[in-house]
Figure 1 (cartoon, one colour):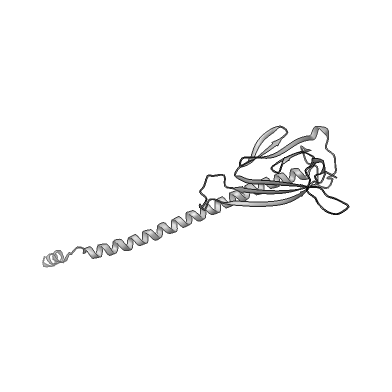
Figure 2 (figure 1 turned 60 degrees about the vertical axis):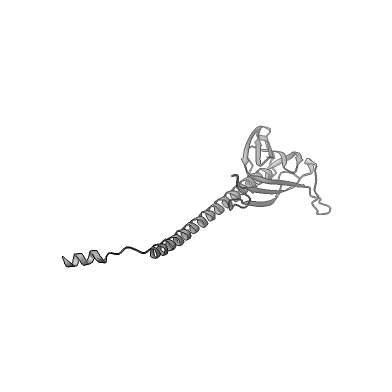
Length: 196
C-alpha cells in the first residue's frame, strides 16, 4: 500500500514549457509534411498538363500531316490559320502517291482556328479537333525547279509545301503563374505528294 501512495504522490503533470516545446516540434513536423504534399501536388499538375498539351498538339499535327500529304489540290487559303483542300476519303498507299481519286471518293477538308479551338470540317461536317490552341500558323510555299528555291505563295494552285506551326496550351483555365499553365510548340513541313 505504501508503494501506491508513493506512486500517487510522484505523479506530476507536464510543465507549460514542456508542452510548448512539444507543440512547436509537432507544428514544424506538420508544416514540413504539408510543404512536401503541396510540392508533390504541384509536380503532378505540372506533369499532367504538360502531357495533355503535348498529346493534343501531336495528335492534331499528325492528322493534318496525313491528310495534307494525300491532298489532291488546295482550294482556298484565306488566312494563315485557315486552309481548305480536296483529298480522297480513303488515302491510297504511299507506294502509289500519284494515283488519282475516283470522283465518288473526293471530299473537301478544312482546318480553321476559331478562338482557341481548332476545327476540322470533313465533307461538310465540322467537329472541334482540339481546344487550348494559342496559335496556328500555316505558311504556303511553291517549289521553283529552275532556282531550287521555295518562295512563299498565296495562290492555292501553286502550293506544294506547307509549314505548319501549332502552339497549344492547357484547355483548363489556369493562372499565368500556375504550374498547370503549360504550352507546347510543334512545327513540321509537309510536302503535298499528289500535287505536281
